[in-house]
Length: 171
Image (cartoon, rainbow, N blue to C red; front, top):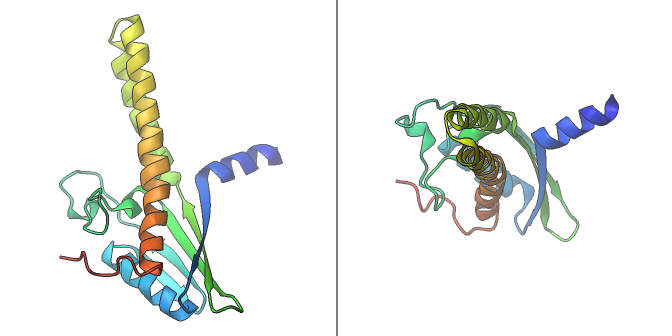
């Protein structure tokens, strides 16, 4: 039973480790600004930030879905249930930032799209329906879970920590 729980936990939570040249306090301030700008409610301690609520978007016309912080134009924090960051200052002046993303909401969106794809596939002839179902399932998984719920969050946080983008893209 424990093995199944570990697999679900590994699927639902993704952990990244980033290293930056900033002191932990400065890195924390930059991430706090990013989270506030993206509509994430959070609690902050000396060496950590934990989201309390991420923006919930159902309709494509809701402004919380969109962002000027990345090249895609979407707010990746909308697609995850939570994010937790821990800052650890190293002896060499660098800070190690551990980012843990709770992807439950992304997995639920994938389940929604797979259900829609299966309903559409049932109404189609045999090979076309199977191809449509597989295409929708793959696009949903890689687009929502892997890209929006993983890579894009890591990229936005990494950009803030490494000084590539701070608030320069804000409207």
